[in-house]
Amino acid sequence: MMRFDLVDLGLFRHVAEAGSITHGAARANLALAAASSRIRAMEVSLGAALLSRSRQGVVLTPAGRALLAHARTLLEGVDRMQGDLAAYAGGAIGQIKVLSNT
Image (tube, rainbow, N blue to C red; front, side, top):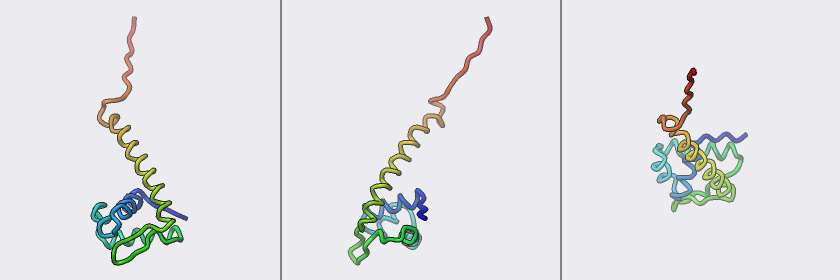
């Protein structure tokens, strides 16, 4: 069963866009060892390689390309949700009920 959290998906997006686990980990503010471990756990959970690793960096496998497309969609949705709800947290949007007697 696949269980990826938002940190995993964000990390994967950063690694894919940077073409490097090292640079992706830095963008995600994670230590290289933690980032590498998270990506390996994702691959184990999925049962397929997401990245082809070499000295020059990483290249997405077909499974990695599919995951990246879904990760981008999900992360963009989370960003939109946070933006939509931020107005409520700041008090800019809400309901006011006014009751009065004649």
